[in-house]
Length: 519
Image 1 (cartoon, rainbow, N blue to C red):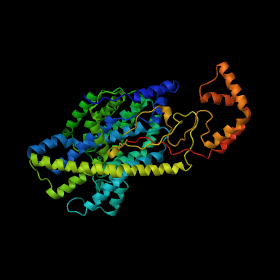
Image 2: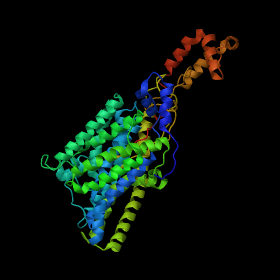
Image 3: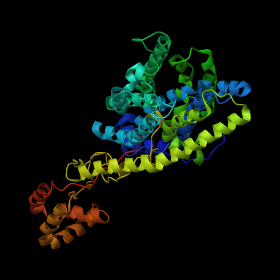
Image 4: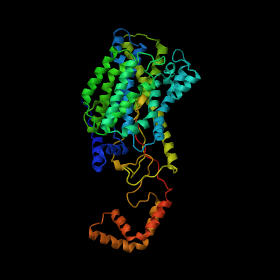
């Protein structure tokens, strides 16, 4: 498939990690690379926009803008568009597992996810509440329904699943996935490639079993919107991501995976509507997502990596959350199911799309990004006041923490959730919550360095002599390493003073922790 070339990234990074730690095995090497920050996967961001566009087309088709031949074409092309939500769930698991860090803490992860999705959810919920006062747009919710929507638990009870902004039901599913993800990541990191493949296979079988049960009732409702019933799709994405991280993915290439996805998409009308249709597209999604990721890692051609698609993918979460509000607002003007001809229907659809995309840009630039920066900055500030633990010497990536801001995420996913930053060497960043610490005599604070410098001033002559002796015997090192070796040999009497200075300065902590990319 034609596309923009992208330089290899994670493959060389993981290989380098394995070479640097030859006794740790592929799982530890993958964790070391993950701790360094996973590389960008722009093709997944582009694919996220395509999935959001399919959901938009489904809702336009449901609004009945087209009649006659136009209506039949919309049904053929976008009738299966609801499968885009299943794509979001699988993608969310993949991206979150891809960008997860071994040293991450559950509350830090949950804080980042709240900062990622909740500001836009609050704004679109407020807009839907205002629209509920208008004629024929939304039903005014009860206080309990509104509270359930704000807490993202409304999808657990079928009569409330489309309270206020109807698409927020999938966000309630994502909230449930986020709650379980730290435990899921803990388990997957302790499994090898075969274990991860077994989890992926079991998840796929669970999805198929649940889709077979969906036509029946579960406590009086269907399984389509139940978060627990959609969990296996998320777990499938996470398990597949783990196999890619371990370098053991052996699936088909991007072209073959895309072909299987398209075939499954157009098989959906042959299946009972609802969750049952997920069985048609699951295989294609489970192959297409890792195939696109591998294409990015190896620099293979990928249409989905085009910069315009990637930019639209960045807007896709906000677009997903706001587009149905626009469709409902237009319905109050043109009526339900106007059944226009093709020219009028296309014009109306183009107008709805343009307004939705414009509002998505406003939400992304004016709400999503600023709110995320604000919430994450406040969290980093709190840890900068002396609560962040220090790094331990010898841990991978514990040499230089850098602060960053997550820029990823997926509609209803993330979710995501989830663009990742450019690759860096595993030793270039510290795991979250770890403070930078030098490799030898750096004490981690200016106080310890000053104490050490003062303790060896009296022995400067011995230091110079020891350096010269070390150079003659072949043990001298270049630059600062020579001075450190000389200090260790020439000033043994001051070792206790230096240790005491280090212990006394333990209260001096480093700056804010590095923030890993999310989905």
